[in-house]
Image (cartoon, rainbow, N blue to C red; front, top):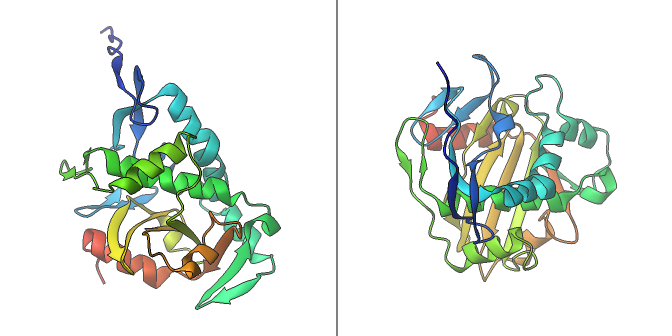
Length: 255
């Protein structure tokens, strides 16, 4: 049987807004998916388990896909080592570094002091949230994930991601590197909420908890711990209870 090559999809790239050949874009990086039957777990609002079909859609042109990889994804995944079972480079680096402060149960580090490019972490975080907001993705169980109505914040994300503007001024990105083995087993799709009178989003990717807040009245304290600010902060600590709570909310995770 001869396989026919699929017809190219031509349309408007969601990022650069130009008419181009569109490539299949993953909601979450392909590298997070398990290569075999026993691998990385996932959780969504309706289902949890292993090895889902990769959620993808024709959204971006080749140039914009490469831009996402170059400015964020490849660097973040290098620190996560998502397909490794015993290595977690970012956690290992922080474990032997000296923190610059403490916030609640978390130690605080400056990215530049530990050799981590936090700007690429913030770019990656916004790229995932933006992709989630612009398309009605199909969940792994066939149910739709409705688009997020981000309004002006969505356009601020797009112009930043495509390189037409600076980082959105009313946005803070917190990254928490989790020291527990449990959180390293999971990735979750991004979910949204409203907290502190701000629009929030969050997701977990193999031991790193990504949290974003957007709002005109965002408290300065959030900017101080943001990885996108000049401070370039990274938080580090035990996250199992926080992860379990998120998984319960998303997928009726057993207590």
